Amino acid sequence: MATERTSLFIFFGGTGDLAYRKLYPSMFNLYKKGTLREHFAVIGTSRNKLTDQGFQDEVRKSLGTAKSDKEAEKFISHFFYEAHDVTDKEHYSVLRDRADELDKQFKLQGNRIFYLSLAPSFFGTVAGYLKETGLTDSKGTDRLIIEKPFGRDFDSAKQLNDALSKSFEENQIFRIDHYLGKEMIQNIEAVRFGNTLVESLWNNRYIDNIQVTLSEKLGVEERASYYDNSGALRDMVQNHIMQIVSLLAMEQPVSFTDVDIRAEKVKALRSLRVYNVADASTNFVRGQYGAGDSQRAYRDEDNVPHDSTNETFVAGKLLFDNYRWSGTPFYIRTGKMLADKFTRVDVVFKKPLIDIFSFPQNHNAPLEANVLTMFIEPKAGFSLRLNAKTNGQGFQTMPINLDYFVDDKDSKDTPEPYERLLHDTLKGDGTNFASWSEVSYAWRFVDQIRKVWDLQQPEFPNYTPGSMGPAAADELIQRDHRQWFYRLNK
Ligand code: NAD
Image (cartoon, rainbow, N blue to C red; front, side, top):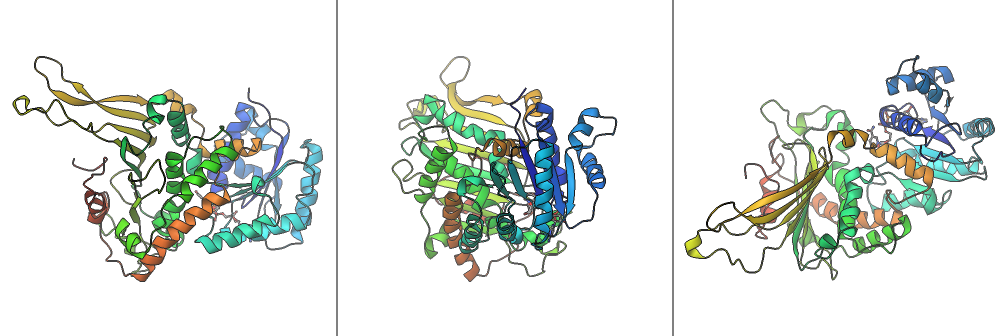
C-alpha cells in the first residue's frame, strides 16, 4: 500500500470536462492504491446549481461505477459541492467555512490543494481571493494547481505570474504540463543519467541531431474557437515541446530533486538561441491543413473563420549556444491532421568517421547512423539502431534494432499523467511541473517566432491531411543535408 496523503481538494471548475474526464478518475486510482484513504475530502465548485448528492451522482458517472461498488461509494462519500461564482468575493467566505468544517470532519491538518480547472482569465482573480478571504490561512500546506495555458506571450504570462505570486510562493504553484506526467517523458532522465553508454555520448561530438515529433491525427474537433486564437506554436511548442527539449538538453542535475532538475532545465533554456527576424523566418515553418478526401479544410471547420491564418503545424530548428550542444541542432515538429498519432524522440548519432566496410569490390551498403528512438506514446519504449554483420558468407553490414517496449500488462498499470501529477502535488514534488523561469524562457523564445509570423501573410492551406506537414518542413531539414528519421514512404 502507498503512503496515505492528507489534504482537502477544492476544484474550481469542478463540473467541467477536465474534472469529470480526467481528474476524478485519477483521484479514484489514487484511492484504490491507498494514497488517498480516510483523510481527504473534495469540494467541487462551479456556477452550476448542484447539491452534494447531485454532485456525487455526477462523480459516479465520471468513474463509470455502480452504486453497488462499495469501494467507489466510499470514495464518492468524500465529495461535496458548493455553487460559487469565482468573481464573487463574498462567496469565498462560504467556501472557507465549508473547508474549515471538512478539515475538522476528515482531520485534514489544514492541508489544501486548490485546483484551477477554469478558463485562464480567472486564475489571477481566484488566487487573489483565496488569500484575501483567508482560505490559505489554515496552517497546513497550501498548493495551487494551474491548468494550461499559462499566458499567451511573455508579457501576459508575467502578468499572470505576478498576480499569483501575491498569494502563493513559487514552491506552492504547480503549473500543469501533462506531458511531464507521461511515463516515457520521465524515462528520458532514467535513460540519460542511468547509463554511462548513453550519457557519455550525449553531446555534439557524437550526436548529429535530435528530432522531436508530436504528431496528431485529429483536427481541431470541438476546440476550434480556443485553438484558432492559440495555434500550434502556443498550444504545443511553448509548453510540451520546450519541456521535452529542455530534458534532452540539460546537464546532469546535482541530485534528482525538483530544485536541482529545474535549475538545469532553466540553464539549458537560457542557452537556447533566441532568433532575430531573419533566423526566425529561416528556421521555423508553419502550416495549415487544407481539404482531404473526406476531410474539410481547417478554414471550413466549425467556428473557424474562412480567412484564418492560424497555424495547425509547426516545424523548427533549435540551437543551443553551449559547450555540449553547439553545432548539434534540435529539430521539432508538431501538427494536427497528420499521418498518425504519436510522440517520439529520435536521437541521430554521427556516422563512423571512416567506413572500412565500403570498399568497391564489396558492394556493401554504407553504414547507417545509430539512432536511439524514444517512443513516448501511444506505444512506449526504446529502439536503438546499430550496424551489424549479415549472417552468412562474405562481409555485408546491415542495420539492426535493439528494441524494448512496455508490455500490455505494464502499460495497463501505467498511471495516467493526471494521476501522477496529483500524487506529486500531494507530496509537494514539483519535478514534473513547469517552473516560472522555464515558462518565461520558453515564451521569450516563442514570442520571437510569433512576432515574425505576425508580420507575414502565410500561404495557407499548405498541407494535406494524412501527410507529415508542408513540403517546407522537409526542406527545413534537407537544407542541412539531413532527413526526418520518421517520414512517410521512406
Ligand atoms: P469546461 O468549460 O468544461 O469547464 C469549465 C468549468 O468552469 C465549468 O465547471 C464551469 O461551470 C466553470 N466556470 C466557468 N465560469 C465560472 C465562474 N465564473 N465561476 C465559477 N465557475 C465557473 O473547461 P475544461 O475543458 O474542463 O477546462 C478547464 C481548464 O483546463 C482550462 O484552463 C483548459 O484550458 C484546461 N485544459 C483542459 C483540458 C481538457 O481536456 N478539457 C486539457 C488541458 C487543459
